[in-house]
Image 1 (cartoon, rainbow, N blue to C red):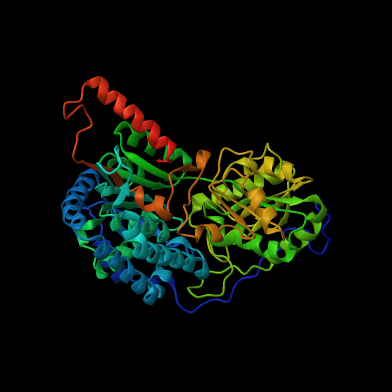
Image 2 (cartoon, rainbow, N blue to C red; image 1 turned 90 degrees about the vertical axis):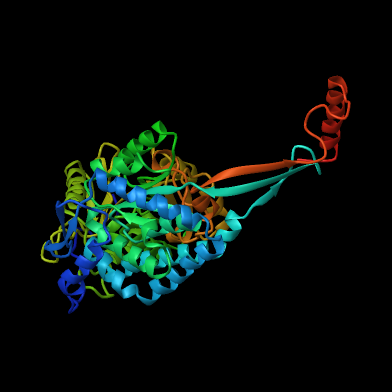
Length: 538
């Protein structure tokens, strides 16, 4: 247990952020919901109501798609894709750059939608605008380079002319989650479009309005309307229908569902990229700047109320600085302002659903009952909204507690101490997940050396997750049970293509010719192979 002073020990109570005048109902009027809902491919009468996390009141009544609607969506998308693939890549990429400008210009519209659907603070909603704009700019500028034909060494130098080309997969099945509704739909759809594909997207129903708004904006930027189809409906029904028709699947969600998606895709010999769960670790080394580390931990653990696949849920601190670090971390966490205003000012918003709140409460209550100590937080805040839970720091967590190994996906972090870096690295890697991790030290070279030994797809030195995730020219994804495949960078767009080799043979065939016997042909090529190796040909 920690030796922080009596004045800072105990759960405490986070202050409320000043309220804002606008309400969710005024920011997301029925007329807007009705307009956006027309973008759903749905022919039946079934509808589902979503809830505003800030208030628990009804937010949107959305049409529900069935299997027949998914079939219609793919038919429309396939027809549109054939024409789109013939458009030069520079013109396709220009749509992304226009979308970038429109997104930044009209960001307040989507910030309201993101907050209304997810319950996150406005600054954390802006994270999605920032990420989506970065992806749009990157692929808008770089798609031509990623997709251009490349000259490759031929079978016979000079005589074989070989090109590697990239062709679109066709129609991408994109299944996106509720926690980052703009970023995790748009940032995967954009490179797919740039590569010449169409997309059939199944967003989570709770946050479908944000995806529908993004589709409208892309159409305004020049994307053919039928190229992005959106289906909304029951996950176990609509999700498999998308996977069973797609030429490639991009899925973000839980590890359990990811396995099912992978099995369905594999049965059809269709590729898939899966960004799944995580139990991410942060290491505070003995030489870390403790003020910076404490500030970084607040961001890494509690941004978007911890409902972020790359946020930190395990925090390892060198024993020699543990008390000093925790005093700083607890103090900063305790002063975080919780709020539901549709304006900047709150440090953390709400959880998104009753189900998510139930998981968070269960993890904390079970841990406390088994002997863990709440250093701050640990309480629901129903006076602020139905799904608010305070940012929580737990000490004394043991492997028998669910919060130790299961992904909480909420504003809860557990503290652990270590004596050696070897011990910290081993503990951080002692999980089936491998999505993200963080190392804090004043020595950048030392930080990178530790980072290279962590079994995660991204590692941040002196940042929680944003440095790696925001480096959109570099791949992002998970190891182990955190998934397969990568978004961002070259891999983020090439996954939506098929590689094609076109080789032209000149002068002589790769067979005995010009009167050469089989023996002379074999002897000639044996000498040629030895010479090629001697002169360094690859």
